[in-house]
Image (cartoon, rainbow, N blue to C red; front, side):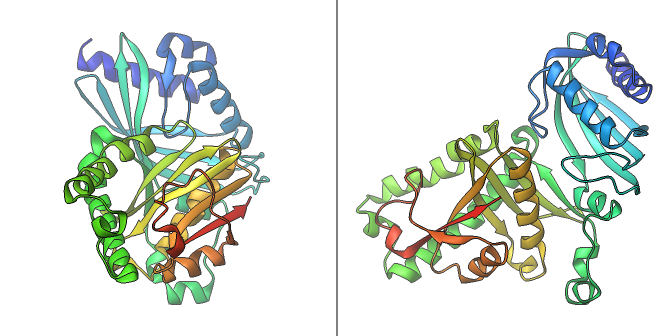
Length: 326
């Protein structure tokens, strides 16, 4: 289809959504519609999600500010407004109004919206407007940066691969330095591996393992963005039924100690609740002392190592395993 027709499909979808014309969705959206950020895998699930949104925000309205098409993709910069008049994700109605701006990327196949590839908006600001979270005066003085816009962007490997790999390289190198300091030897010696085996494992860590985290239908991988700069990352995956695991939580050194790690943890735990997890596990090296303070502040407690851990047996004596009940 032409680029103009693709844009027209998205325009009409937003118009019909604003009119609450759910019957038009069958014509505009593919039966196997996929939205990785919302864990939606078909049209019926998407209708259920939209119904839940309207229960919480009956007057939700979206306005297209800009729309661009290229290939099979359509980019939309939008403004959404509404009033929190009903229960939403377990939050009692506050009566607060909100204004949200963001960018959505949809993919069009055979004349229908087949996938939402990315959704970028400021969820923290959205919650602040609802009065669900509010920085204290002390917090504003200690962490003025937290009053700025921070965004949690669900990873799309087609768009974010290079940024995500850069962060994982930083995280891996920091992790390896901590191992060497803690054990007084390098990883190859510690694990009795050849240097080639270690390099192969590093590549697997940066490719296969990243792709697994990004494709978990019961998990999420976020990039943390501040004023257009990527400052960190964090992931949540399903460990087993009703239990999630936090992985690769990392804030770049220049931004550490400013409250961004705390905001990221809040986001991941909220997402764990949305997935229906009863508990969340994590593992952490004993040398990661700053992280321990953060985990304890959120109510994580130490537990025995869990069978699903990916930590090699040789490292476990210098590792902590933690759990939080949701």
